[in-house]
Length: 125
Image (cartoon, rainbow, N blue to C red; front, side):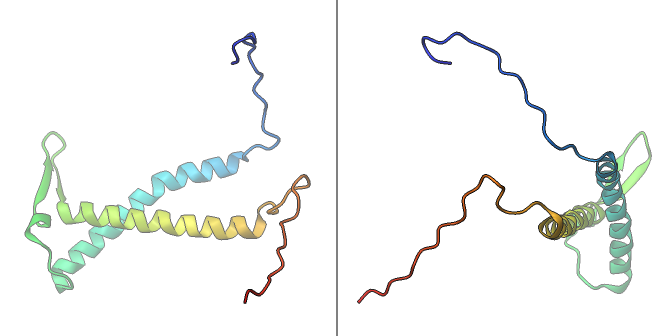
């Protein structure tokens, strides 16, 4: 707002496109599904690790977290593995989305963009 201009409220412009509801629903399902799948994978991997001794667990991860009123005991190693698997799962989704967007997405330059500047290479002596 300038010094000598009166304040006028600008209208909010609507986007020319809208996200399809199926993609919103799929994203919501994945936000719920990936932590559940990560926890299930973490439980299996940690218990198999305890049986087969693939990796020695540090003493900090061998304790339990007890939730008193629910009577739930969670192994610290399962929590750490769940976070790791969630990070990997979301990373894979980002890679798949970026590849799909690059293939199917809009062109790099729109109709109002100027073409990129082509510079001639000159040899310097």
